[in-house]
Length: 317
Image 1 (cartoon, rainbow, N blue to C red):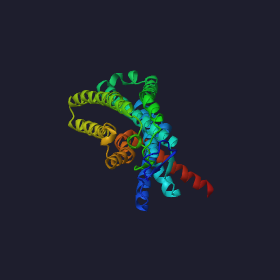
Image 2 (image 1 turned 30 degrees about the horizontal axis):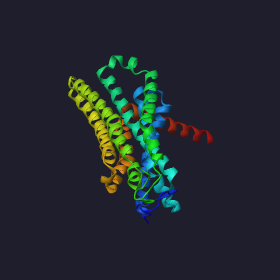
Image 3 (image 1 turned 90 degrees about the vertical axis):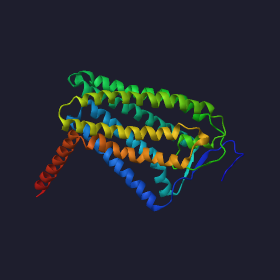
């Protein structure tokens, strides 16, 4: 029910959640696949010393981000289906928006850093260990977090200043900033301008340009490889990476780079599902599970687990 004259509300009804068991099971399956894939990659990188390298350090960060993003996107679907409660407080809604935007911004920056890591590895292989040392990796990670927080701080403060709403029904499956802005009757001109200028330029265009430039140099180096098999393998890896980057950037731009009055929440739901479901599932497959080092590490751990179980069983006998 709309409350056109309501000036202050304390909760939202999240009405975009389907109560169909099939939808719930499908979302649950997607989330479990995401969780298993990314948690496996993260644990492998932590416990296998062969993977204690800069590239896998960033992959571990990406895995945690994918798990977090999926949890933020889907947790209300799970709680609503189990408890039947589709109510969320305004404070919880604001915090969910901030968490999602912060994680998304950080993931964009991590993808940029990963492209730089690949540039150094392919274009400057002899200097890779000297350039991409542990200190630089830690500094780059810290820079991504600080930069993401500082870029989003004015936006976060603006969200908390929105207190007037036309309705307390949000036709979405989680609290996202565009449906939130669509409901408010407060002045959002500053927030929209900030999203377009800072979100579009600083958070979006500049990192994407850096990724694009890195891959121009990478492709130039690949073309100089004499082995046709080596060129095909390298191009395949680059195309897979760029596909995920383009999908991630395109979906975010489609969601956030339009005026709130022009937002189609039906299309936004689709791209939110793409970010929360498809991208976190694809990332481990593209970046990790097709990587020979990761597959070798997984095989070692599986052999060790089987050997340990056999030895334990023999002792009991």
